[in-house]
Amino acid sequence: MTTRKLTTVLNLVTDRLAHENIQYCIIGALALGRYGLPRFTADIDLLTEGRHWPLLSQAMTELGFECFQKTPSFARYDSKREAFGDIDFLFVETRDGVDLLQRSVVVEDELFGRHPIVQPTDFLILKLMAIANNPDRLARDETDILAVLKLSDGNLIPEEFQSLDMGRLQLFAERFGQTRRLEGYIKKINRKKSDTSRTFVL
Image 1 (tube, rainbow, N blue to C red):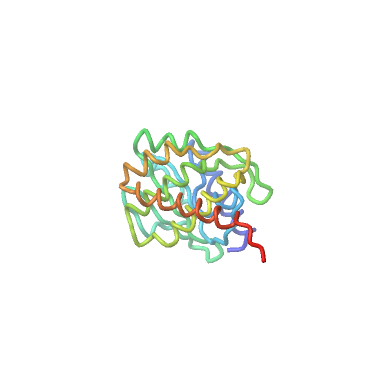
Image 2 (spheres, rainbow, N blue to C red):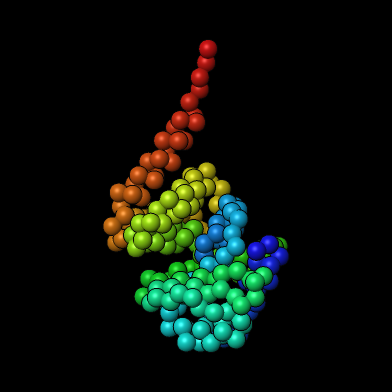
């Protein structure tokens, strides 16, 4: 999808969610872009509560989308209109999951409009959970994790977002069995910073 079509689809779907009082926030590549890491995407990734599934399913069907994959934790839609791409919903059920929604921050973007965006710490928590649930995602998710950690290390995360909460991140990494992996990412960032700070002379 072009940026214009992506914006059209995003606003079409989120306007309907707002009308149905379904709380959501943007995750995935669109969130990365708002952190300052633009990446081409033809998909839209949204987080919402699983309890909204019946209403969400009806709304998406009425908007012309078809569900082609559904599990208790996510649903994937594509549009009957070729111009519209895929929309993925990740569902949360627990208090911790709902907290991710509550902590999201509404950001005004000149391209996509006004939408709640997941906090960077919660973005990383979702990525670690995704790796724990499906190791096949490792290469893609690892790249995103390192990129956000590097942004944070350079104090480059936009000020509308909270700074990374490393204590909270480590807590969830332990819960998902990803403590050593997270420690490895942090060491890699610190090692690269050390390497670039060296001064060589002849």
